Length: 415
Image (cartoon, rainbow, N blue to C red; front, top):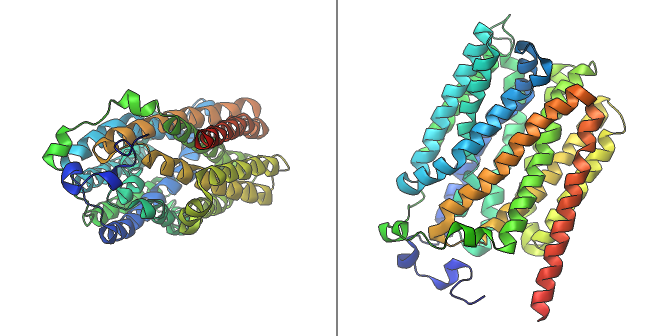
């Protein structure tokens, strides 16, 4: 590949691409977005821990208990592309604030649905809440928008590290708010979630990411099909899809499975808390590990951790097995997803970033939606062990694909 088609920042001036490389600004934005990630993460943890239980409480057919979580993910997938296109025109800050605002409406709708006992309304409210995630998933990309190539992986990691605080705060918010509107279980938690989303909206007003210049906006870059045909993009998006789907498959079913095994909602919140810590705590150093060892080794390490998760999960159904398995699952997701995200940022030029990021996240969350729905069906029809067993084919596909990509790059380098 020639220097004209390689990584954009080295060969193009700020006037040409419409954006400056400014690591000082990137650091400030990464810190703000890390706080926003914390607040968004709190809503996600509350939703993941409670939505399946609320679904089971409201649905006549218990096999549909995880449909609200699937609707949340479908809402994310459906809004991923429109959100990116809107942000291309109005900027990151306005787009992020709008997403948080719609999320607040969804959370309030969830509380209202519990109040009137409507499963359909609750599922629809979770789809609205998915708008929050649709925009929040761009926080990691936004942190890299004005970062140098050397700082990109760290900027992405810094933002995702905000999930550590969410892992601590989210379960506590759930535990202390779920009975605020007793006897309506969990209605108070969704009211609290609404307040958290509004707080995120306020924090996001401080984001400072310059939009593309008019000339750069008019330049659409290469056709999306050409970009997506790159082997690096294919590997990146499939790794992200597999990593996130495996995590969702098990995490969605875990609270329901735990309660079915005579464990408590507090036990489930504890397990999800440590799962979330494991998801985000490594972000403080994952960027450095990628810079030192490369994305291939980090992604493969993530695959190995998720295989270990499956082995532990099959060993028993006590709280210890759930806790260790979900912690390993979180670690595997962190390495796999940050590695895949870093690969994606190496496949596009600045003027192409919105459409490529949108395509990536649309594919990822389409797969995640399928995994969340499949999780409930497998759990209700065949049990927890079958849900866990579904993990292994996905890990095998990921390992083979990443290994093939590494061998291909090695062959090209030797030529």
